[in-house]
Length: 338
Ligand code: PHE
Image (tube, rainbow, N blue to C red; front, side, top):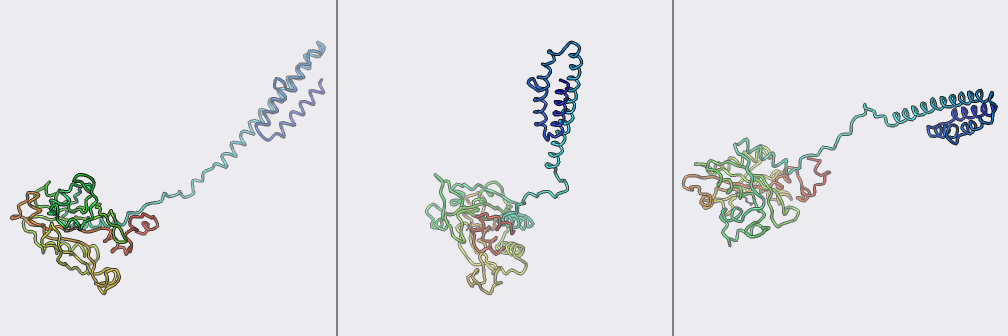
C-alpha cells in the first residue's frame, strides 16, 4: 500500500506539473481527491490493514493528500495569474495613441448666406423677424394687395393647405405681421423658408428668402438704392456694379428689380448671365399705400421700402454652384466644401 501511495503521489505531482490550465488542474483534483478519486479509493482500503499499520499508513495518506492539495493550490493560483496577465496584455489600452476625432459637420451654404446677409443688415440697424410657414391667405396675399381674383396670384404657384391656409409663397407676409405688431419706425430683416410648386435646375418647391422692410417718416427711394448698394457691395465685393430696373409687385409702388454685374464674367456676358452681363438678385420697391391701410399705418405720414431675395440663387452665384438641386441633396462630399 505504501508503494501504491508513493506511485499515486508521484503520478499526481507529475500531472499537476504538466497541467496547463485551471480546468485541467481542477480535473486532477477531482480524479485524485474527489469522492470517487484514486486517493479516496485507497483510503477505503485502510480498514483491511492491521491495527498497528493502520495509523502509520493513515498518516502517510494524509501527508500525500496534503502534498497533492498544496501542489494543486499553488498550480491553480499561478495558472489564474497567467490568465489575468494574458487578459491584461491583450486588452491593454495604449493611452498614448491619438483619439479618434468625431467627424465635424459644416454649415450648409444656405445657412452661411443667411447668416452673412443678416449680419450685414444688423450692421445697418435691422432686427431679425420671423413668421409662420403655414400662412393665412390674408397675410400672404390679401394684405399685400393681391385681391382674390388678382392675376398676380398666378405669378406664384401656391401650395394650398385647406380653407384659407397655404404654404407661404414668399417672406413678404412677415412685413404685414411686423407692422401689425409695432408702430413705425420699423427696420427688419426676415429670413425663412418659402414654397412654390416649381422644380428644375434653378427652382425648388421649397427654398429660402430674406425679406427686408424699412418704414419711417421720410424714407425715400434713394434710401432704398443706398442701402441695397451698401448691401451688394458687402456681399459680393466693393466694385460690384448695381442697377435698378423698373418692375411690378402688387405691394410696392414704384417697384424695381435689382441686378448686380455678373459675378462670373464681370459684365462681359456669359452663359450664367445669358450674355446680358447682369444678374437679377432681388425684388424691391416703395411700400404701396394700400398695404399701409391693411395694417392701420397712415400713408400720409410715413413711407418705406421693402425688398426680397432668394437665398439659394445668391448662394449659387456666390459659390459658383450651377444646379440648385445640389443644395437640397445634402451629399456631404458637396457640403464639406463650404
Ligand atoms: N415677395 C417678392 C417675391 O417673392 C419679392 C419682393 C419683396 C418684392 C419685397 C418687393 C418687395 O417675388
